Each structure stands twice: as structure tokens, then as C-alpha cells.
Image 1 (cartoon, rainbow, N blue to C red):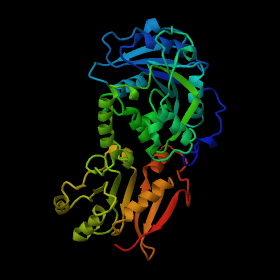
Image 2: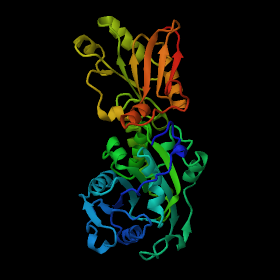
Image 3: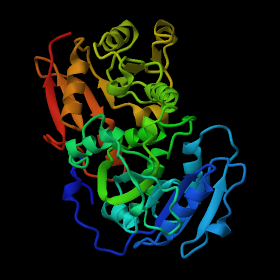
Image 4: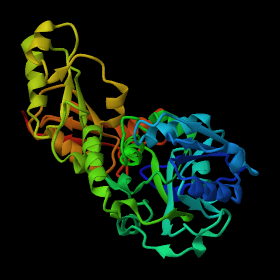
Length: 413
């Protein structure tokens, strides 16, 4: 079942058999912590069908036999080429059995009901991306199998708690709230994971790969859900509060800015990288008339836009070299751009900015731009709507007119 917008509260509870869950545990040189986490996975009320330890190049990879229990445990590893959690998790997901994937970090011990609570809504709707509640404690003195809630407690990150409270556990999530999703306690259907292409392996170094996946999930129509009953205990304080975090956060910001066109991340337009809007001309014109139509797109006040030229005219390629494209859009750009613009006639400079504000503020599927005489000038389509439709879901649109389509009248160019 799917719903419009991010209304996960409208999902009908799953009534069939419980989902087959595969758990991927990301690990690097943490044998004691890993033993605690795997022991807790063996004791889940909803027992996973597989646990895969995704080792990020430890000098001595974990021994699967030493971690054996009721749930089958396997280990996949990769060469140590720096912090490559994204690549390790992808390897783990490929090796895991199960229709639903749960991602944990090796130093994060789940309570017995964690897997059941995290995956219940995913079983009801495969478009759900669920994040659990990560709590903090000093687990250094805890033996495998001990109750992590009995260990000395540490403060939870205030920014996460405040974000979940403000959004009512992401029910009221809007643009930018995908940053409340963290990979240490994450669950999603394999179908959604594959549709998004998994974690982006360009993220090397601590941080960013989970926010990147969450951005692409939101941008492609997934439902974001915080499951506070899915509790796992992290050994030690939040990494962001540690002294060594500053340099890592700098690199995280740089990589996110290059790959995530959300204005809240990027701050300034960088259309040469991954554009916010992908524009194409759909009008029976050529030569200089076509060039003038492209000019009206390039002069938009919403500057984070890239134009694709119709093929066949080398003069246009020369004229717009470096500022427009002639090749088909890459899958990466299609997944990351927030919208696609189909231009039928010249646009006034503020048209795209007004349409983008309307599209994102009301979570619409499409905005049709018309001139004073009612003539269609352009159509702006949301990647969120396209992604959900691609997976067979209900159109997005908190304000719905013809399934999330509204008309915006703009001035003459």
C-alpha cells in the first residue's frame, strides 16, 4: 500500500507473515563491540534470516564461526582504502538474504524488539525508509547478551531528538528533514534500496553516505518514518560531539554539496555538478529561435538549472558550449535533481523560481506554467512524483489538484 505525501500514519498495518529480514552490520576493528551486537541480533523477537558483517578492511577480519548462533552469520570484507562504509554496506546488502534490509553499526546494540519495530511499516509499504532510535551508553563493561539499557547512559544528540519532535517522527517531514535519517539504525525494502542504487560509494571518509541515501530516497518519493520503539544502544557518545569530528564534518559538507542539490545543503547554485533542475526544450523551433528559448532558461533567477539541447545542430553546441548539454541525462542526475522542466515557450526570469517554490512547499507532482493568455509555457515535474510512479506508488501531493498538478500563471517574458 502507498499513500500521498509522507502520510505514513495512513498505512494499514501489515497482516501477512512477518518480513524476511537481512541485517547488515558495518564493522572495522571492533571485535568486542561486534560480539555484543551480533549476540543481540540472535535474541530478536523477529529473528533475521541472515546477518552479514560488512567489514571495511580490518587487519584481522571477523570470524563468522565465533559469531555463530540461531541466525546464520557470514562475513564479507574489502581492502582497507580508508573509511568506505558506503561500499562495505553495499557488499553486505548484496550478500544478505531477505526482502527487507536493516543496517546497523558494529558498536550499536539493538534491544530485543528492534528488528520487529523497525520493519513493521516497511512490511506494510515497501516505499518506507525507516530510522530507529539510537540511544547512547557506555557499553565497554557489558558482556555479549547483557541488557544494553542497564549500562551507564550517555546523552542523546539534541538535534536528532528535537528534529523528531518537530516533525512528529517525520510525519511532517519537509525538504531537508532527510537529514534526520542515520544509517546506524536504518531499514528499507530491498526493492527501494535497489531502485536508489544503494549507498553512493563516492563517499570516502566519515559521514555523508547515510544522508545522501536519505536525500535520494526522499527525492524519489519514499516515505520517511522514525520508529522510536526500534531502540539500539550506541557504545559511547555521538561522534559529532567528539573533538576529532570537525575535520570529518568539513569533508562531509564538501561531498554533500557536490552531490546533493538541495539549496539548504549547497547554499549556492552549482549547475555544472549535479543540477537542481534539468531543463529540456519541447517546441517546434530551431536555429536562433531555439537559442532565444534556451536563453530564457539560462537567465532564470533560479540559477541551479542545466539545459539539454536538442541534437543535430553543431552551431548550438558551439554557442552553448560549457553551459548546456547535448547528451542524455545520466541516471545520477535524474535521481538527484529535484525537478525536470519541459519548456514550450519563452519564460520570464522569475518563472522557474516561483514554480519551484510552489512545487516544493506543497509537495506537488507537477506545476504547469501558463502565460497571461492561458497558453502553456512550460511544465515542471517533481522527481519525487516520478520516483514513486516508477515504483508503482500513489502520486505525491499534499495539495492535490488532478493528482498533484497545479497551474501557475506567469507574466510575459
